[in-house]
Figure (cartoon, rainbow, N blue to C red):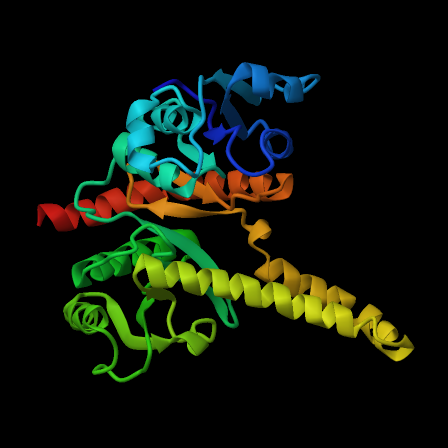
Length: 337
């Protein structure tokens, strides 16, 4: 591993990943880069270099790739067949120790495949999960899996509970996180075979399991960590994002109805901005793929420069918090035991 100045974090960034690449991605890298954060932009020089003109920063470096992977390709096949694509090369920079994490807004499937095949899983982890932090009414809620594993078995949800608990302790300073299971009712007899099996395993684990959490209580302090399968989790996450966007749009439209509404809207604007910041995915930029030997941050495909910059800062924070090392210690110890 190359030497770095004390406190310096180096992250690889897929310069060609996302709907607005490379322009918005490069702009996000420029905004986030600093003496404490170096960004390795991975992309084809002929595509990316024009957006680097006049950048004048030692904290942004272009790492040449030869291809990209689109969302229309079969992820694992593309990752195996294109070792010099920006997605694979970015993951390889992590596995080789040149970067401490990889951030990308390209194909989610390719990011997942590159994480599993190139960065590889932590010993003792069967299913890495996508972890997102939801803005709960009484504090953050760690939610997983948000889309990595559409088909799960009960033991996978137990593992998600362990992963989420490690994340909550080290990233959010919650000493003993309360773990809940997303389900259609609070009673332990409710739910699918998956939910029933997972409930039994979680209840018998050493985790602070508080039982089932209904969807309506997800943001209302029912638990610090809420687990579910990746299919349900992805649907729930996108529903929350869409609902928040629709609600804010309705409030804005109501504020333009007449003069009284416009005055009220002006008075409420500071508070509404705070609400928007709490609910806007661009504010945190991305989600962690937790359970790998290195950090992987997956961004929305339509990420703007603001979202990319925030995802880089988000990733740098996780590196400094030692999230990957904490997972390796705690889940690796479980596997050895």
